[in-house]
Length: 520
Image (tube, rainbow, N blue to C red; front, side, top):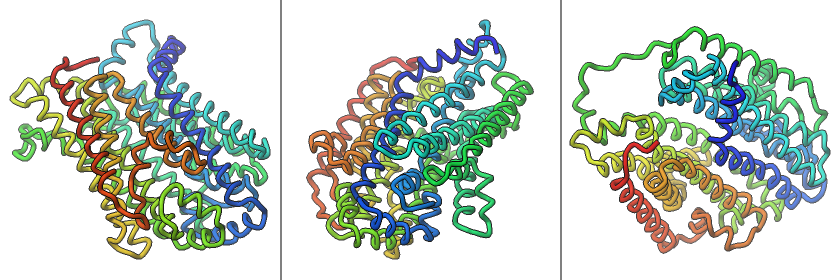
C-alpha cells in the first residue's frame, strides 16, 4: 500500500473540478424535492391522499421504491428513490476511470515505476470514490435536515445514498480487473448496477418475492427506512459488501500482469472487413454499444413513465399545487399534458448525456493515442471528427424517437409522443456543439461538458420547480423549447438553438483542425 496517500491526493487533484460539481449538483436534488413536496402537499390530508393513490401501485414502486408512510419525510425518501442508482453509477465510473483507464493510457505503468505499492492505485481510487459518496451523503442529510425534517431520518437518507456508492465502488474495483479495456469494465459495472435495480424493483413490487430486494445494494438503501423507523444495522451490510468486493479486487489484481486482464481478449480478424474500412464505419463500431445501451435503458424508463401517467393524472387533478409544479417544469394546462411534457424534458436531458458521451469519444481516442495513427493515413481530421459527430447529432434523435414511442406504448398512444420527444433535439444539439467546442479549444477540459449538462439539469428541473429568476433559468437551452404535448410549437427557438449548436461545433472543428494531436 506504499504511496496510497500520494495517489489519493493525485486523484483528488485531477477531479478537483468534476467531483465538486456532481456532489453539489446532486445535493440540490433532495433539497429541491423537499421544497416541492411541502409546496404541493401542505397538510396531512393531501399527503395521505397521495399515499392512498400510489403506495399500492406496482409501477410507482418499481420506479422509486416502497412508500412507507405519508409524512413529508416518507414522501421525500420515496421521491429520492432513484438517487442511489445515480450515486452507484458515478462511484463505479470513478473507480474504473482511475484504475483501468489509467492502465489503458499507460499512465499506471509510469506511476508504478516510482515508490508505489502494487495495490496502492486501486485502493486510492476506491477511497476517493467512497469519500466523495460520503461527503455527498452528509451534505444531502444536512441540506434536508436544515429544512426541519427529523435529523435521524435525514442522516439515514444520506447514509443510503453513500451506501450505494460504497458498494458499487467495490464493484468497479472488481470489474477493472476482468477486462482488457475500460469500456468492458464499465459495461460489467453498469450491468451489475442494472441487475441490482431489477432485483430491487422485483422485490418491492411483488410480495411473494420481497426477499429479492435484500440481494440488491439499491434495496439496502431503501431498507434503511429513512423517516420510517430507521434500521441502522443495514449499513453494516454495505460496509461488509464493500470490504469484500475491494478484497476480491485486490486479490484479482495480484493474479494478473499490469495491462492484462483475467478474462481472455477476443481475437480480431487478420484483416478488416470491407464494411470497416472508413472513418464512419469505425465510428459506428466504437459508438454502437453506448447507443444501444442508452436507447434500451431510456426505452424501459419510458414504458414505466407512460404506465404511471394515469396515476399521476389522478394526483394532479386533486392537487392544484402539484399541477402547477409540473406545469412550470413543462407542459400546458391539462394535467396529463403537463406530466408528459415534464417527462419529455427529462428524456431530453438524458439524451443530452448520450450526446456528450458520443462527442467526448473524440477526445478519448485522441488521449489514448489511437487517433494519431489513424490520421497518419489518408483520413483527415475533419472527416474523422465528423464520423463521430454523425452519432453525436444523429444518435440522440434515434434515442428520443425510440423513447417517445416506448412512452407512448406505456401510455396507450403508440407513436403519438414521438414528436414531443423529438422536440427536445435542438437543446440536446447545443450540448453536442459545446462539447465539440471544448474538445477543440480546451481538450484537457473537455470533460467539463458533463458539468454543463449537470448545470442545465439543475436549472431545468430544480430551478423551474422552485421558481428561480427567468433570466437564470434561460441559461438552459431546454427552457426555450415548446412544451409538448399540450403546448404550441414554435420554429424560431428551435432554429436559434440549432444555429448555436452548429456554430459551436464548427468553431470546435476549426480549432481541432489547427491544433496539435495528441494533446495530453
